Length: 258
Image (cartoon, rainbow, N blue to C red):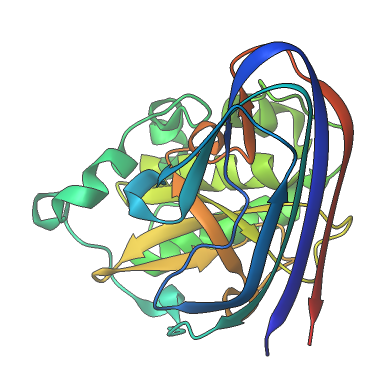
């Protein structure tokens, strides 16, 4: 079923500022993007560059004053859906090169601090069964709470506080999976049942030679997740990164089935 996506945001800048934006649904074999359009307020500079792992586009913008972006698109998901819970993991020495960085700790995913924990709490599981055990643990032990975290909150803080929003759930999922020796990356996305409606974040794990989407919040299924970009954590795929002071004006996201 196609997804109709609309996103709008606005920020004010008091001085000439460079901004990196990534909010368009990625054009990929697994998702067909049509009727796409993006409107941006007047700029001094605009350029497209590839996103992390060449998934999606980043937009380099330079401006002074009000930045307003309006984006819309229809996305039809054509993703192969496997029962990843039954899949084996790939031994590290057999992993393809592009997955290796997703075994390591990153800014918001200090996976090395969870290695002892996963070997005790998830002992006896491996591969997809380990990933499912982690997902189920997060779903049972974390509470989705708007405003419970800051942009600086990492997975260890989320583990201690036991609450957060989608990016916090995804960071903890990614950290625990990496601590288990399985590559995992952070995915920014759109999905129709996210409450409240907003940009969404999920994890993607590498099992049996392929990437598989996992939403620890339970609000989105792989069949209805439209990818924007991927990265080591949220820092790689923020919808807006400002290299100067930005003042929030408004933001809205709507994703509906059509």
